[in-house]
Length: 146
Image (tube, rainbow, N blue to C red):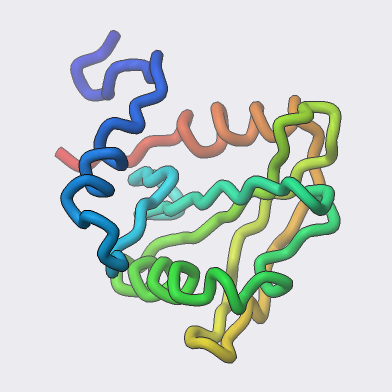
């Protein structure tokens, strides 16, 4: 393994989220987590949000549909992406690997409570294609930070 890269992810670690819950003791949070962030050689800072679909199929779901629930997080991510001069993707997924997944690159968004995703490059993909995209297109093209 090259010294330029991080170690492989081998385990799920939710301990930091548990710590944050303990630290806030039930207070509302003004922060949020980011599912995945890369420094990509073509996209610059790249933020990927994974949206689990439990009541609607991933191919039929869209963040605008649930904007009233998640507008703060999407608006904050978009402001962060713009400040970094980066790229924002979201992935609609479910635990059923036989479903059609969605990979969408957000091109333009209106932030705020009445905002929405205005323009995107949205693709329906099979799990195999999602895996290929994430491994090769995202993880496989790191940019040099040092």
